[in-house]
Image (cartoon, rainbow over all chains, first blue to last red; front, top):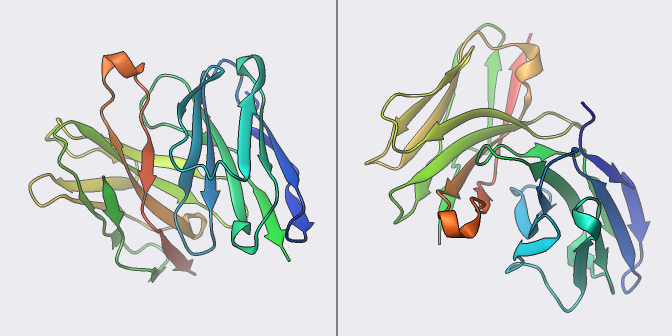
Length: 113
Length: 120
């Protein structure tokens, strides 16, 4: 079974530029999550989708971050414009039925200069 | 709001020894789940073990077991016979039991993590 795929693995940009991350969850997984993991901290949920509807985006900085999940499968997370404090690993995860059992991708590491 | 605290930032242990990682949490919920996730260096995070709060029996998965103390809001992970492959960041996490009306999906809240190094 293929795992959660994310791209790009690494991205370096300057502040005020934009960036987009892509995630392909495990086939059949209805729930998709984007987490932000700043160095030295635990992952923080940015947004959670159930199929293509948003379940929780309470911690998503909506003035600069946006996310969509097309047709309930792939998802894209965009940051525009980026700030220095956005430097982090962006983790995508998916799950199906067993509560709390998330399957994570390898993450996309963003460095904002 | 729920919070998860891992007070030990780092630990090291010799191969084959037993190590215990501590975690405390704060919640007013009665029904919830607790988890330990493992994040090896440069690899993806994976679920190690899961505990349902309504179950009094502590969960066990091979060399991994938990000590769940609901009244004390404590959830520690014991790793027996430590192996080099256990070297990783370990995260304790909490999830409320989802209401049926919410489609069974709730937010997973993580602690800051603890770096475990297993030495040969």
